[in-house]
Image (cartoon, rainbow, N blue to C red; front, side, top):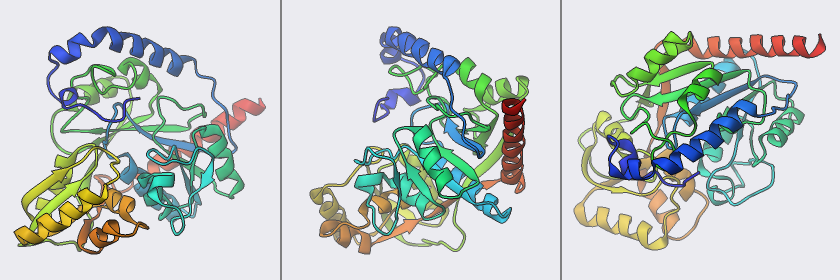
Length: 344
């Protein structure tokens, strides 16, 4: 999987996408075959996967967090399973947010671990089994829908309504991770995030296939305000413009921006430049919780930058506030059916 999504992925397919189409065709055949023929291991608790159709952010991590909160309200003990993208550890690890840094376990793992026990693992099966030993009764898998070697009891695929599936081509000519037909066959439901139109064709396709459609919005956490503040907004996420729009939503006047690659680890020069540029222009620094997670625990320029930045937090808010609970209930129903088939 590529580490950074080129801009042409998110525009109408042009010469770059068509030039790469032979490679996309090969990639798609391999990815589709792997999804269709994967032998999946089972674990003795439900597995709920939150994935997306494409490379790049669609809101998986905020969705996983929202589901975990709903699970706790039901008296459950959820735990997260993630690959630990961007981290250096290559062994299955229970994340300690008070000890681990993002360069070891990844930024998303740190955010998840603040909410519920989180295991990073290159092997999803091994990671799931580790979570079971921690006494958890629901595994929420952040990403891994296309590559899962685990039996999934519910697969919720998140799609952003502004970017949709980009140019519709598969990697490397576009952002799509596997043939849409195979992904559609295996998903349980779609979560449509936002109110724009780019996802509408895919949502209609899912509805015709009898898939459940949920709707949500990524909203700034209540109580945050940047009203009247002129800011320098910086971020290293898949869709920087999404963050800049959020800053404006809470009243920030975005006078300057700095966009970095997804999961980017800032160099000392970059961090010092952000501090200096903001001071010279009389601007307040703002960033995302993921970016702040990559700064936490570091010293020097990172410590200075973190002390001078406002972190804008966001939550995934479902239009139907009971939707996360319904998703969890369905996962448990599917899990019970799976166990009955196994013992029959």
